[in-house]
Every structure is written in structure tokens, then in C-alpha cells.
Amino acid sequence: MGEVIVITSGKGGVGKTTTSANLGAALAAQGRSVVLVDADIGLRNLDVVMGLENRIVYDLVDVVEGYARVRQALIRDKRFENLCLLPAAQTKDKTAVSPDQMRALCHELREEFDFVLVDSPAGIEQGFRNAIAGAEQALVVATPEVSSVRDADRIIGLLEAERMPPPRLIINRMRASMVRRGDMMDISDIIDILAIELIGVVPEDEAIVVSTNRGEPAALLPSSRAGAAYRDIARRLRGESVPIAASAAQEGSLFGRLRRLLGAR
Amino acid sequence: MLPDGVGADALAELGRRLGTPPALAGATVTLVPAGALRVNDLGALENLLIGRHSAVCVEVVRAAAVDAGAGRGTGALAAPEARARQGDGRAAPATGDSLLVRRTLRSGQRIRFAGNVVVLGDVNPGAEIVAGGDIVVMGTLRGVAHAGAAGDADAIVAAFRLQPTQIRVGGVIGRSPDGAYERPEIPEIARVREGVLVVERLQPGFGEIAAGDRQA
Ligand SMILES: Nc1ncnc2c1ncn2[C@@H]1O[C@H](COP(=O)(O)OP(=O)(O)O)[C@@H](O)[C@H]1O
Ligand SMILES: [Mg+2]
Image (cartoon, rainbow over all chains, first blue to last red; front, side, top):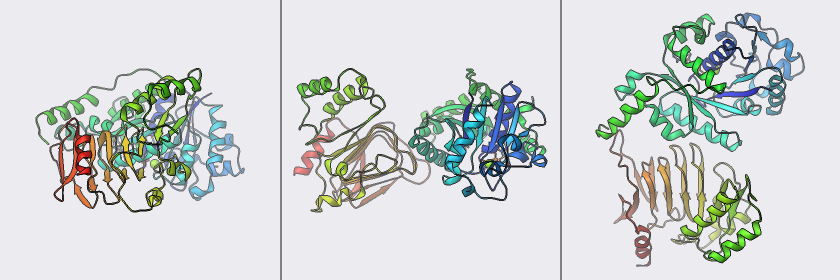
């Protein structure tokens, strides 16, 4: 039986959809069967990022309302046999689905797939409640900004209250050069506050923008640094122990500590 | 209900009654002390309940808060009206009812309690504690803390790392400086002296001094 993992953040625009698409592609490339569930109803875009928009016939709301069976609504990826997408509805809003329905759907999907990745909408309202309803694990995405970390903290508190195991953290859009200049929160600052396990650090990378527009996840591009970070996170999700690259993690924290020691703030 | 002060006998008796460990796996245990509970007593109780019997959480509340059926969930550990039910409008006693919070308070979480509040964890930015008595954070205080909320200007806020967004004691407000500032990596205590909020290094025995001040 597969694992249901929700990708969430609180704040919008920090990279939940990017992360869902890239982890899905990376896990599929590593031979796992994966279904991506777009739970951002009314604002769907995982299909666009995956380049599958033109194949949508039925969506998640059609499935929970009984107009289509799950099999009919699943869209097979262009590149991988073992990667599917369950698209969100574009024309309905999030009240069209209940947490119970999402739970039932996720339970059905995990019978067939190794990984069920649920892309959560922003916010802490019903859309978020729906997205986490069927999940047994969560990945929290945050960018190295105070407001994003604050929202991630709020989300972690809500997940803890749901009695989920402690979520794991992905720091996205890290810019080593800015951290070095002291213009960005470093990894140790973020971990100090959130106090959860770090599962990966994804650098800021133009390849993400290009690949998103092309509907081609960067995780499949050997040259993309963000893609490499997502491939590593996929391996960690599969239980492999892959050290977090020194360039991403230690640089930040070492400089941060030095800066504090030198009293530079 | 626990007697005033927990002796070794009482502890052994409790251990016997609980039976073979782990008798409390996964449970949240709420202690309702009849009188003051000393830190050492609490430590011993925690060793027993958490260490031996696998409880996940030990909270200490006063009887009124329990009777009111106050929620255990996010930010609702004690009913806000708990204070009002004290009735006479006097500040909470310096010792006595304490709420022990065995977790980190995260953004958006809020605790209001008529007595003292002790947090075994951090208080993150965006979290808030309002206490009738003292506030002690055995971690980093980055959020908002309001001690002596019913007007007790003798209340204190202490933390292993005091980096609050804002502290209030009684009616006196202090906030962290804007922008970057030096953050000493030592335990500190904030209290009101001559009408202003001052932050000092936390010295051993500060509690006794504070209690003395109150009696004076
Ligand atoms: N590591 C990254 N480097 C550069 N751009 C990124 C990165 N991660 C995300 N983005 C961009 O940020 C924007 C928001 O990302 P998205 O995944 O849609 O966020 P969310 O789903 O959390 O709202 C997108 O335009 C995306 O291309
Ligand atoms: Mg999105």
C-alpha cells in the first residue's frame, strides 16, 4: 500500500505546485508509481506545469460527485507510464469537496500507487483541510523569508493538532549568495524556529521558470540544480539517506554562525 | 487531585496505582494540584508519567479550568474566562496555579491562563501567551508574552532566550528594537522597575527575590 503525502505551505507562491510536479516526475523516473492529486480546486495549475492540460476530460470534483470513476479521470503522463495526474476542477470552488470525500479518494488511490502526492492550495481554510484529510505525511514548503516561515509555522501547528507525524521541511528558492551577504534567512535560522526535519533545500533556478512554462519538470533535466535537489528529495522520500548538499545547507548555517560570533548583527 | 507538595510516598503510591508500565501510552495527563506544585515535584511526576508510563503530554491546570471543560486543542488550553471566575479582580498569586505547556507554541496559537504559564519549548513569532501571573519559557521566546495581565506589575517574564516581539507586564509594554539588534545568548528576565520594563540576566534565585518583592 502506498503513502499519501500532502505538499503544503500556508503561503501562496512558495513552490507547492512546482514541488509536487518535480517530486512526482523524480519518483516516477526512479521507478515508483505516482499519482499527483491537484487539490487546489478552482485554481488548478498542476496540469499546466505537467504539460497535460489538453488531456483533461474529468476532474477530481467529477469523481467525488460520482460523475466519473477515478480511472476515467486519471491522466497518464506523456513521459512516464507510472505517473498519473488527477486534475482539479477549474469551474467549481473548494466547497464542492469535503474532507471525508478526499479521505476516501486518497485511500482508493493508495491501493494502486506507491506515492499519492497531494498539491495543497494556499491558506488554512477548507481547501487546506481537504488536502490534508487523506494524507498521513506532510511536506511543508517555505522560502527563506520571514513571512513564509511564519506561515509554515502556523501550518505545522495545525498539522500537529491533527495528530499527523511531524512534517518535513523543504526550503525552496534558496540563494546562497544572498545568504552569504546576510540578506536572506539562512537554514539554521529557519530550522531554529520551525524545529522540524529538513528533507531538502532547492535553490533558486531559472530552469524552473523555463521548464514550468514548457510543461516539463526540471527534475528531468540533468543540468538543473533545482532538478538535482528534487531528485535527492525523491530519494529521501523513498527512505534512502542522501546527505543534504554542503553548498546548500552548511554554507548558510556556517556563515550565519560566524556572523553571529563576529557580532555582525 | 494532588496534595500540596508531592512527597516520595505519594509518588510511590501513584506509581503502584498505575500498575505495569506503560500504563499511559499516548495519553495526555492533566494534573490538578490542590496547592502549589514545586518544580522538583513536577520533574518527579513527569519522570513517572512520561518517562516510565509513556504519556505524551503532562499539563498542570487549576480546578476551575478543568471544571469548565476547557479544550485541549490549539490555543484553548484554558478558558479565557478562567480569570474572571476568580471574581475579586485581584492579581493572581505569585505561586500557585500554573499551566505547564509541554510543546512549542507556533504562530497563531494562543494561551490565556489566570495563573502562571510555563512552556517547555519555544514561543514562536505569531504565538501569544497571556497570563495572570508569571511566564517562564524554557526555550526561546520570540512571540508576545503578557504577564500579570490582570494588573500585577510584580509579574515577570523569563526565558532561556528572550527575543520577544513584545512583552507586557501589567500595564507596561516593551517591544524589541526595530531592525537588527544584539541578542545575548543567555537566559534573561523581564520585569517592571520604577514603571519601566527592564531586561536583566537571569540569576539563580531570582524567584525568591521576586517573591520577596511581592511581600514587601
Ligand atoms: N526554485 C525555484 N526557482 C525559481 N522559480 C521558482 C522556484 N520554485 C518556484 N518558482 C516559481 O515560483 C512561482 C510559484 O510557484 P508555485 O509552485 O506555483 O507555488 P505555489 O503552488 O506554492 O503557489 C512559479 O512561477 C514558479 O515557477
Ligand atoms: Mg499551487
